[in-house]
Length: 151
Image (tube, rainbow, N blue to C red):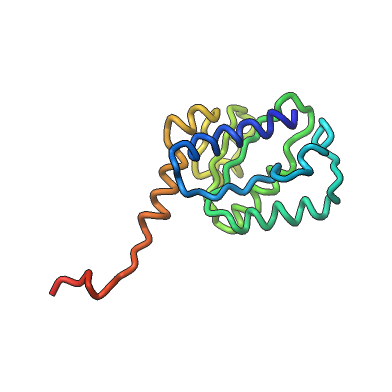
């Protein structure tokens, strides 16, 4: 399960790295402690408080949050991901949601919080969803210089 949780993130990151996009990826599964996470995803050598705090800091730093509500065969709901969605919603950070589960995508809270919903990573990449947000953020920045003025 943990490997599947990491794979979709790596697939997205690698897609944009191959295109030489200047994107910083914040991933809660980054770091050497990833190898120490139990198969159910509930325990590691890192205290739960530290995991919570690092994930909160990551959401606070993000320009865009991509979440995947697929459970990859687990029977428990993705509570950490749902918390990250709530934080992003409170911070008004756009959320791209990956899910094809009607229990999530039809829920009024999810519909309100998610800026864009796609059923899978392939659709996210094909529809250039991240491109839309990246271009909007980076093309919107303009530094006015006196030399730009037309008198």
